[in-house]
Length: 181
Length: 273
Image (cartoon, rainbow over all chains, first blue to last red; front, side, top):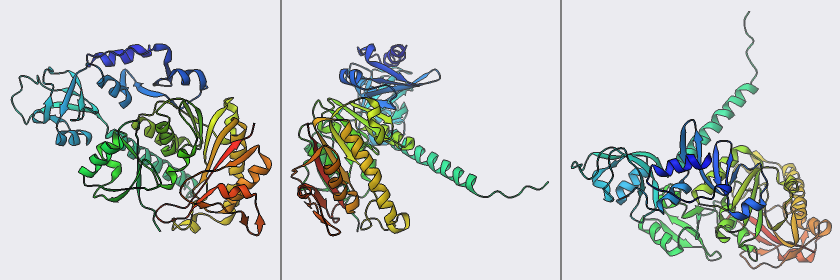
């Protein structure tokens, strides 16, 4: 089952990686790929282990950046973007046609990995037009779905959550006003 | 006193020279830390070094200079089974994985759940693939029924009032004693799960003798360990504390006085067969 979700996700990029299913483990909704040594040695009950592949939420699969990097090493849908576009993409922005340096064969609705000029994977998105036919350089060509800036956003979300729970905790500890009857 | 901000290049993901030139091209002025192979001080940066593409790609970690020392003290780490007791926030765990080139196994217990999310985030960002994280008290490590070649003990400590302005508002000397007791419990459990002839590195960011030399003296007397010679930045450990003469081998430990780095204590132990 785990393989199917991951394989389906990879297929969206026209990619396929031969992952050893016996080394994939599931913990709640998260999938991990274990090395031989990890598989042999570590006991169950972990919170995180090996290479995190992604999580299933409802019907959707949310990939990890490790999985995206693995896909980027294969023949998959990829777009190489210029420096400025790469930075804007990390900041959560969509990609304009003019920012694409390499890989213009994609059609509208295709999923594609976004790479910087050094071929490092920055995330992925979905094309909003046929890249070869699109003539307007200032039109959004790829919608941002996930980018590495997410690491910072997660931290922010996490600290906000902690702050909220601390506030809640302290308000619970505060003496309550007597209610009028 | 505020220690200089430092970074460590993750050489498993990129070469040192490449990362340095990329950061310099962003306008970040770096200075090589003389006592570390992969460490650099940030001399000038107009923006946070935690918000660059290079950081998000896991090419370097932000890690205080003295805190980069303990993981480098093990004799050989590749393909070993390593315990990183008290792993959060994961700076040293990533460093261990980096030195091991993602080989072998690292087991990283962390007691607090909220800290585990940050640890997992750090591991994914740095592309660490050889680590297992558990929500567990390091004092219960033997429950895993595993034996380790190397154990890194970056134990929870009282910190230091020289670099922490609010130290006296947060802690008292009673806390130092309580922490010292807890550290001994962790130390004893760590020795229990270390293989014969295995190595343990004990580190704190405190300069209180109770949490450092006195704990090591106690370990020599009560646990099956001996202090190993290390060659790293810092001064000799104290062998006379509060008028008490300690085991002479404790001078092999290292005390790092706060200045360019935070205050730090580090020591390498070997479990005797």
